[in-house]
Length: 180
Image (cartoon, rainbow, N blue to C red; front, side, top):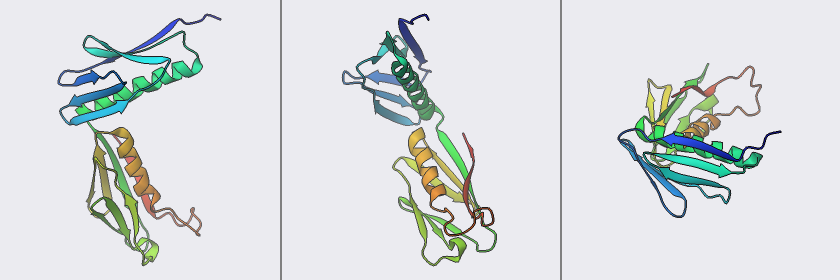
């Protein structure tokens, strides 16, 4: 079997976006929508500034090193997409008998009257994420950090889990329709 001596991933930086790499491994990417920072620390994988882009490189990679280089490449591309376009998740509330009311109260998303329950259910909205409710049942979660937007959408979806009922019959809840 042939041994690969080096793996390199080129991350191209589009116009209007700047990437800075500090000595302690923190990459800061700034664009029209804002800026994101993330620490990339490993003894076997390194990030280098390469002209107008970034280079993720590992020498004499093992299987975990190859995986780490690919993961870092994906994180950097997600950061670039976040500061240029942003990420958006569309969710929708479905109910059959008891109409739910949805509201954003500060850093909490509140669901009232879920299955006729008297106690409202709530989900955390992470910092840097914008949540909007429209048409009483449509929820839009948007932001520049893919992980925070996805986790906030998951928190909202998870706050309406069905307990002590047959999930095949009682299908009320909030579900993700699409993500961009």
